Image (cartoon, rainbow, N blue to C red; front, side, top):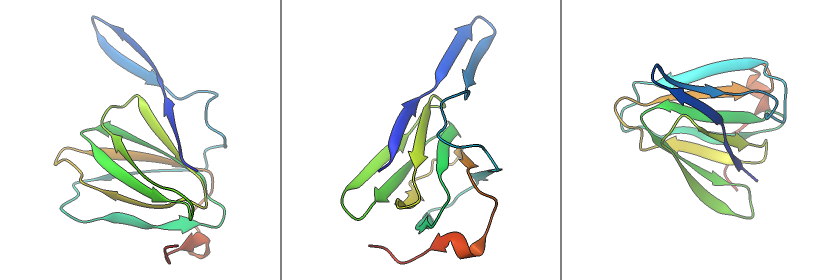
Length: 120
């Protein structure tokens, strides 16, 4: 089941800083980001092993999730929201704003055999 975490944010007259430290349920092995997305839907898969943390660091997007029991949609619209996606979470990312940048931290290195494309 996905879990939405609130990241610590520090603000002063110089700007804002958000921190990801000691809150992820995994060691980061891969980092990627998605941007310049048109009307397309991204994702549409789940994993055998990989846990992911998704943060929309600019703009916004929606991540819809189905874990075989519950269906939920999460609006990521601030860089202080971090959505944890477990391997069983079949997820799709959509409704990206034109300026959206979605940062994803992953527990595993890329392995095409880790992907499951069939929905529940």
